[in-house]
Image 1 (cartoon, rainbow over the protein chains, first blue to last red):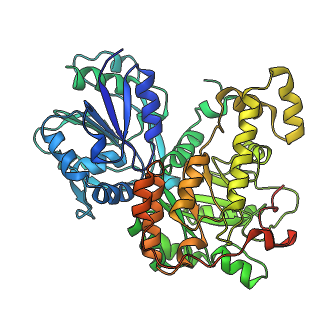
Image 2: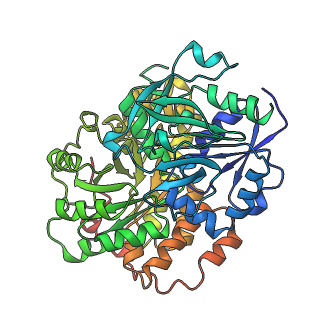
Image 3: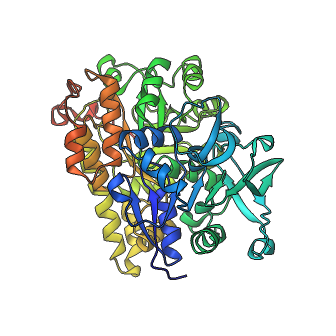
Length: 202
Length: 301
């Protein structure tokens, strides 16, 4: 999918390099975002997994929260995975004071599945009308000290694209896509392709 | 992808454990000895903490046998912070490792900083569910540890010195040896594997992909934001800081500065701002003044 668009990948901490590898393999250029000066020229944003507390500190330190919130409100396509989902949540269980971007009308519970020994993989059945590539086979979801979205916390405007074990794990609200798992780690790029196609170039 | 290709392994344990190592990239893992220090580290933006009873500088000063930490102390740190908690076991001490696994630590460091329990063998890390990180001084040592199941490598440096020279030496050695493999004709790889004492399949893979098949971090001697940035430029994907933070004059500020330096290692102007007015760094020991038996890095087989 060759495209002249540029995807900004938040590179404050975490698995940003893996997202960059995936996006590049799909023929789209990327830029590492660490500073408001890096923002002009980006057409979309990916927020990787990592430690949400560490990323939050850096968002504050380098003055990224307000400019990013403004861009997201203005329709900038965003894809957040794991810690990225936490940073995009309007509400956090237990630690709502964590400075973050918000935008997704959901509540997220951090580390709700437990410690690393409780990390797991699961086959995910993603259902997106008009996107048959997801019905061909399940996607493997790697959940690493993953956040959880209580089903009753999903507010208006949010579509649940996939649930596992009774909990939403993939959600979309207009220009914002959030996953509790790590599609950048498995080599199955369907979700990144879909994000590029449906959200960035609808 | 075939299970023979380490970096493409598809087993669940491997993927989620290498995955956690991936999540720790671009960050700082800090040694802490109390829950209060763990909170300071997390507040500063540490991506994980290493719970231990004494920082390496004190282990060096106190002498004697250094062992796994008291589980009570580890639990206190687990309760104090939400970021991953690592803990150290002695080289080859698989029962300390089992105990740490039972405690639910997020990562075990089979570490030369503690007194080795076995003078020939390391822990068989493939038999654990919990991920392991191990130290190395060169590529052969790194690949032996990966062959035993480590999902993260850290170059050893010389812990508890505040002198970065050994960290630089080990990272340069590792990166140079990786580079040499990438340009080596295939018919020489078996002899290279023999010479460095490393599994052939891993040697062949490193030659092909030009990097370790697991994340590669740096440890042992980082004391300043500039040290951290230096290690990132030399090839580290994250930095462990032991004594450098809590043996300095103002740990909270220094911790925050080192975290910021790892993110902004390519930006000297920001590094200048970050490095300003941090108070006294740890006093440190010049590595050249250490005798061979005082060097922790030579532990490991």
